[in-house]
Image (tube, rainbow, N blue to C red; front, side, top):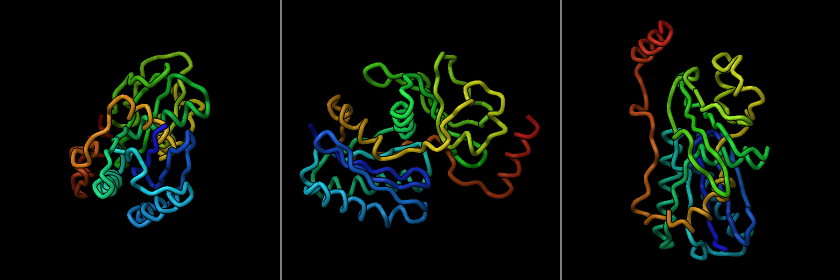
Length: 235
């Protein structure tokens, strides 16, 4: 079995995980402002617990996005730096797919809708199907919460903090009932996805690692935010 280090910092929860001997070891740290300071100590703890060196890993996986602009850049940058130093490939993975994996592990569902709070009255969302591996049903989208429209599927399970962030937008929608609000991207789920991704040849040279951005503009001025909110209100 491969040994894979995974790094995830796309939300307010930073986490690292190590897939080794078919088991996953993990660490996590809350507080978005501390992600850049917390990741490397967590990596060192995991390697020490497993009794290995970074160079013993076969690849480094990271949450490429979508998610916090700063967060996905942090994960990409740390993964690149570690991979360059240890001469390892990297595996960029979609954060929403990691959420779907967490939801499947919890519920056993094979049809999953993942909705992540994108701030600025928007969400990132995607729909996935599991059948001996994951298939993307609806690719990651950035939209207003009330524009989330999964394909109708019996037994669809929903997850993500986007439901908790905008409860009024999802009120009365059948797919939102029973959504697992506490599921956010986590490195342990990236680690679970990374082994099959590595086997499928999805690893890249460290220099080719790139974050996944869905929002063209990261920040708006106060005037722009007012105009956007006014347009949404009038829609």
